[in-house]
Length: 423
Image (tube, rainbow, N blue to C red; front, side, top):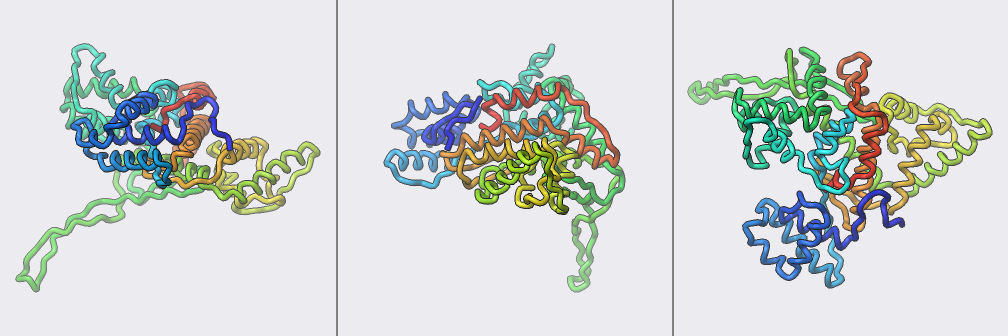
């Protein structure tokens, strides 16, 4: 098994335990090396630090669990502990990748290989660079404002910065500076709303169908004869269209977020026999094509996934179980080549369990390098793909093209050198 991942800082399983302890204490915004060093410097006092006011109360139980795991590891005892690594502002990350936005990718740890970025603090810092603005808000408030505004909400930014205030205007200006790709995409997704449609539907590159019903809240007064005609208000939801709506923004971005999770699961905890067999078929097919041979037997599943690849430009290993020597010829050279690249990355390690909670990924510390590497590669592939054109075309019902903010291959090359997409 290969222990080093190219162009990425690699850490030992022991070091990932130390990173996990620092993360749970509240130092997850630091670079990896200072986190490791902080634990080493406090090695004899870690348990007592749990009662320190600096320890994040929300994650204190996780901190204590991680410290207990470290003590067991120091004794050579097995623990089964899983280290968690979180995406850095995943919504902005994904929107920036899809739009080719280097600025937004930089704010979320996907460009600068040597620094752990904090998009929420960067936004408030950019606000304060504007004349006459001095904003001091808790990071949690800045996070709420940034996250909700990217999904079309105006209420939360107004609640934090006031209505029609210089601070609110500075916030919106800062968002356009920090993540111009995501900020532009916001309008395109808002305008994709189909008035009075009962649902919006689109298909992801792995064939997963996202179908979101439009639901409206309805209130009815209920009278109960048996209780002397007492009444109460009952609130429920009905599938009913509306002229306008905001939910396409969050739903479309979250659907890509969920697609990333499925990709991670498939690449980490794979069926070794199936992947090895598929790899042999793909390699054999590429060799046979040199002599002009090609096998193109019909297969509905293979055709289905090829169609998604052709539209989105994203190769997905979900197709592997259906590839055979009879139908592999239906795949293009580019499709096969990309699948083989992914398989090569997977076969560097044994299959391992991965637990995903939205944008957090938990694995045994032995495999954390591979978790980070797969995540980075998936986002780089998204940056190179047409997934955004594909989703927008499905939502609008007409073919269209989103003009990316960077040259082809420019952003993905930077992502493939990054270290802090997951932190």
